[in-house]
Image (cartoon, rainbow, N blue to C red; front, side):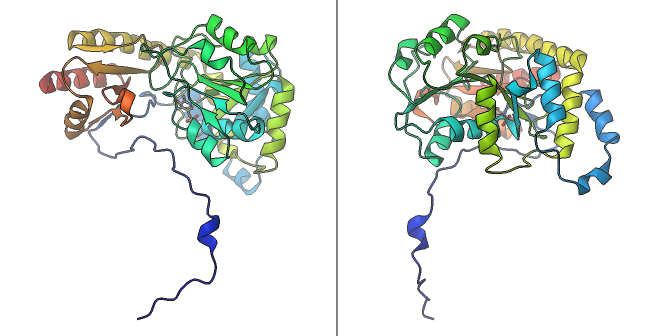
Length: 356
Ligand SMILES: *Cc1c(COP(=O)(O)O)cnc(C)c1O
């Protein structure tokens, strides 16, 4: 049979993108999932309560577009004004909004060669030119690389997947050299014993801090993220947001988000537990011949002295233990290991002993 040829040339006009590849979400009952930096503990009891009490009749109605109760709860928690808070569907959504809103210069935006691999995907999607200065041999950022003229700066701090944190002096240095563009500090992991740079937003009107409920608040499945900064920046983001999707967040995510941020005791207890398990895991990994930088996150980015990362990855996988391996040249010998419960990490270490 003869094939019909399309009359139109739509293929010429397709936006071609290479999508971000998230860590796999396998579904085995006995698995130990240490590959996407999720929290091993369930959401706070207050979240369960809020879910039980949720008025489903309200789902008839559109959500309140500014997410006011959640914005207020976040502002309250950090002691800032509500006009300084923007919420979104996970920090991925918040970051995409930031790229759309602030990175419209012809000059390249800057972020390191090794960092959260969504940044270059958004830059490509939105036609934003970008450059990626190389991290040094210890995976630290080099401040002077960010002095050049640019269209904006994005720094994950602590960085992912390296787990390395730059101190406040470093951030100040970069910001001082970039007063005419927006500087983003992505603090997805800051609650695991890092120090937030939020106070810098008081001094510098061009700095945005981005955080998420996905890691330290055990809510990855609910999709809640937020940005904090001066009200002019937040207003610009809201203007773009309301030109794109007026109701990004559901009534349920707003209600459960409020409950999550109000349960401070549970948050402290679970993050402390993860930090303690992280330090325990570090010691065991050293005994087994791994090396890694000083992670203040809920993961460890480690390489073994003699055995290839890919081999360890595959053998763990056979045992239904999932860690993350990146196939990029500079880091192909590393594994990113999320911190699970103490019990999960003990099992992980036991299996590692059999593999090495
Ligand atoms: C996990 C992560 C995010 C995205 O988190 P959301 O689940 O979309 O809130 C953003 N930045 C970094 C560096 C991350 O590791």
